[in-house]
Length: 167
Image (cartoon, rainbow, N blue to C red; front, side):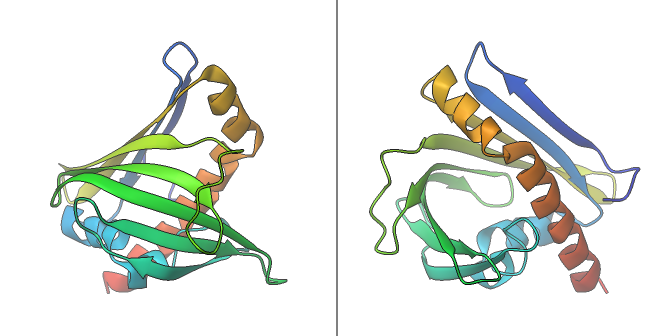
């Protein structure tokens, strides 16, 4: 991450939320595209050294993104995002869960509501992601799984992709 770009990771244990606010050196439309198109998500949406592969995606209200984060040795960690509300280039809301390769939700791990908003910030864009969990226990589970470090690494990959796409 370029040192002059904003990155906030705020844990609110009173409200069971994580707020990630991140500035990107790209315009809002390009950042939106990177968050909402599977061919771009597959290039950045996993912390190093993992990669991402999309099984299916329908970015629409009621649609979904079924994907895996893949370790170099081939181990897969599946996720399912279900889109509940979309206002193009402003925000989307979704339910996010761990799943199996068939899209069945893993009820042993926390499910969360994601509210992802996109704003102009001069020539840059800011993405604010508010992740709400059902309980403090769920919030602490994802924190202990390395959510902050994973988000930092993942968003640095997006920085790299945006630098390539902006050329």
